Image 1: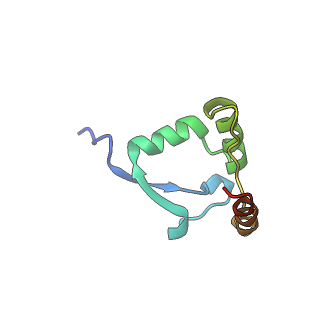
Image 2: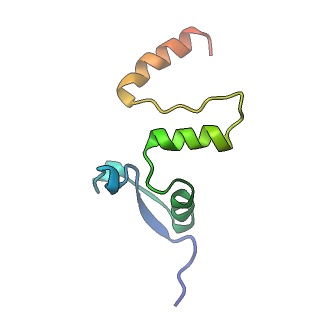
Length: 85
């Protein structure tokens, strides 16, 4: 019996091969199609490697996609807001 392409599946946000676990905060429920697409594009790369791929291949060359640890995000947000963006 063939399964539907878009059945829900669990995606580990930080993959287990990079030290991720199966706690609820590390799991996203996505369609099987989305899950397969993610791993086709990015395999089990870490966020910094993924950002490098996105910048090199996918995003407007006049823009920069960045990965910022959450503990640094509030400082960056303050700087960004001060520039009137």
